[in-house]
Length: 183
Ligand SMILES: Cc1cc2nc3c(=O)[nH]c(=O)nc-3n(C[C@H](O)[C@H](O)[C@H](O)COP(=O)(O)O)c2cc1C
Image 1 (cartoon, protein in one colour):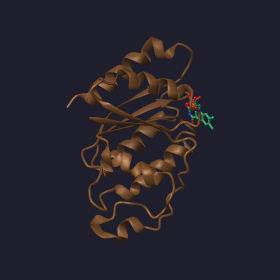
Image 2 (cartoon, helix red, strand yellow; image 1 turned 135 degrees about the vertical axis):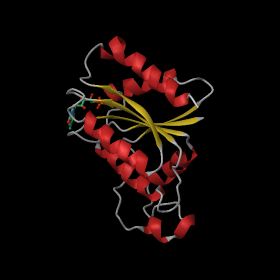
Image 3 (cartoon, helix red, strand yellow; image 1 turned 180 degrees about the vertical axis):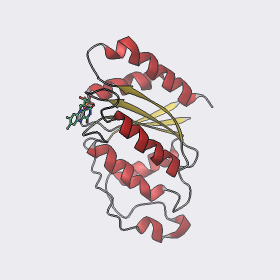
Image 4 (cartoon, helix red, strand yellow; image 1 turned 45 degrees about the horizontal axis):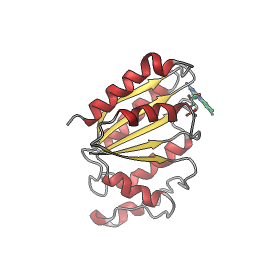
């Protein structure tokens, strides 16, 4: 099984990255992990040109040529997509939002390209779990359902404070890794 582990935080060594590292380390060794950091990549917002829908069933790609072009291949070849990000303004980070919007080019409108893939979320927040993480989970579950993906679950570290990973988040991340890898 190939797990695509995407960091949607602007901080490469921040709170979310720490969670993602624990999660990736907990995946069984026979699973392949592709680790992607959105920060620093050039991913423009969806232009809503709908070119992805004009090419019929064979059209797989977006008309915008940027770093997302290569990421489509990574998404298409994975069995599980895990998105790790902090809560920003009760919502996705800009990096994660652009990535998810651009996945519109792969949805059922051009054939069910993401159908059956698993998804999971890893979130960190400064407030509690109801200070935006809840809204991200709700929206992301709709994204997964829209694409026929199977949302396995999420780990929410909020508030993300000193020692919180060791106290209770580490075991939750290990459990998420285990359930993601269970057929
Ligand atoms: C611009 C900005 C907006 C934020 N908005 C929220 C929010 O709405 N809810 C929340 O719980 N935390 C919010 N936070 C706090 C971050 O989610 C939190 O510090 C997180 O752990 C940072 O993760 P990182 O180190 O990976 O960037 C915000 C932080 C920033 C910088």
